[in-house]
Image (cartoon, rainbow, N blue to C red; front, side, top):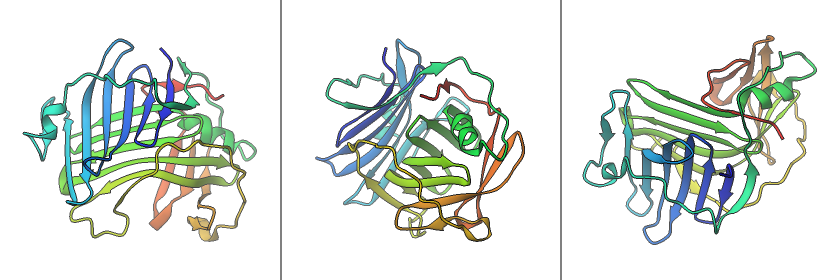
Length: 260
């Protein structure tokens, strides 16, 4: 089976041996959503799904919790989808990134001269965590970074697909083309829903900027998250709103991808 990222204007699938993350736009229902499937090469089943019907401004979700039970705000609707098999076809989709799965390899220690290399290699792969609060899945390929988080309290849901480029002084966010960010009544400024699937991803040169006091800087080109500090085992970037983005040399990944 071929692994990679496959896209169209209404559907994007990031497919690996153990996972399939699907981002979609249902034109007839004016709905955007995300589905996460888990399994193996032969069969994957749906374990998490969220949808936002844009005209109705309604968000529904369902996921399989750490207790193995259904957690949802729409038990008779979207909650019934959990457990369904992955049946999407890749035939009509364009491949925009290739994924090569590896058993893992020795990660380089971080030094002043290889921050960009470490930020790329340390992040690549898939991670999945369940807790009492909810679930968190991430996937970083050669070109794209995916995040799918679902916390029941306050209907706190985030699913994003972004093009983030490491460089020696931090990381450059050159464009988030899918965003599903729901929280409580969605009055917070970071809440929003957007979908621009189907675009090819080309390599961009990072125009270096000076970030004051190690905090994120917003420019016309995109976001810059500057390097705040590092050790051989850890790299910390200055995020937005005072956040810190921490990356570890030896994270607990479910799958490892090879850089190509």
